[in-house]
Amino acid sequence: MKMHKEQATNFLQLIVAGHIDEAYEKYVSADLRHHNPYFPGDAESLKNAMKENDGMSPNKTLEVKQTIEEGEMVMVYSHIKQNPGDLGVAAVHIFRFREGKIIEMWDVGQPVPEESPNENGMF
Image (cartoon, rainbow, N blue to C red; front, side):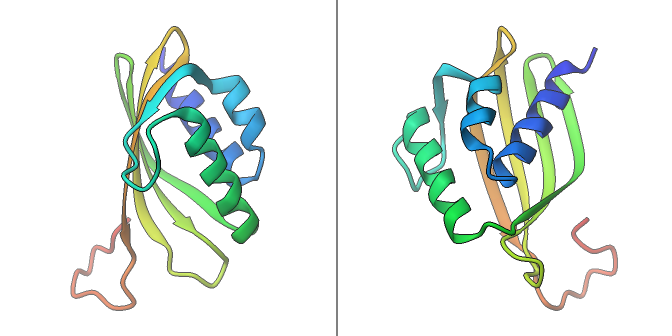
């Protein structure tokens, strides 16, 4: 059963759609800790940053390209655009679940370049 992959992608899709409180209620443990270097490591700080980003970029999109689940760990590789005309970023979110809730989270991103010599593209 690959339940955590579905939970992780649903969480990200709710966040991008601006349903941040709902995403946290459904999927996030009260004990969440995250590793985003730009914010304090508690759940509330990250939630507030997500709400701020939603206010600045209400038309952002997330297209999941690949997911991997191993035990309680899930990796989601996606293409995120802050607005439709944006080239966006390739993003990797890594989640650790405990008892069906996200207990720990990491995220890294790489901007999609306008031009690249790699004929395979980023996705």
